[in-house]
Amino acid sequence: MTIEPTIRVQAEDFDTAAEARLLTQTDKTIGAVVTFTGLCRDDGGVLSALELEHYPGMAEAEMLRIARLAIERFQLLGLTTIHRYGKIATGDNIVLVIAASRHRQAAFDGANFVMDYLKTSAPFWKKEHGKDGNAGDWIAARDVDDTAKDKWR
Figure 1: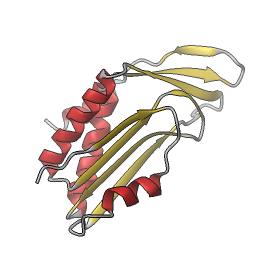
Figure 2: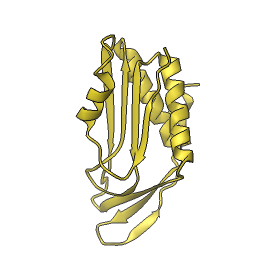
Figure 3: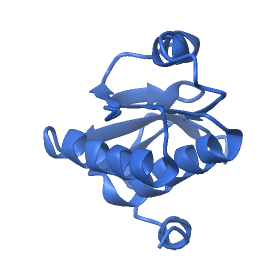
Figure 4: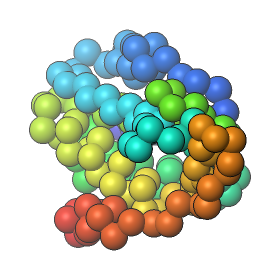
């Protein structure tokens, strides 16, 4: 049986619990569900929001490619990936990954794999908006994200 992942790029917020219920409601062989929710954080006390942009069509295609790799590699029974775009306030949801499998380790590894690849491979860009009203620069890619992805090779 081929598992088809759920992939969405949207401006609207998502409901983690509702998405997890949708993923698990029909397959009674699922024994583990791992959810990861990435939030907009304010490390230095100066951020009011992040502006997230994406390359429409290409972002979804890359997310689907990553999800299919994860399903195959970790024998996942279900996978949902949702990434938001637009101006997102600190404390609000940005990304959701839900991985379902028979056993916990595959679900943990699958969710980690997806996030490590999303951070480096999917065409999303972030710009900081300060509490002072000024928009900052677009955030550059980080070496630590490439290192995290490389561990899966």
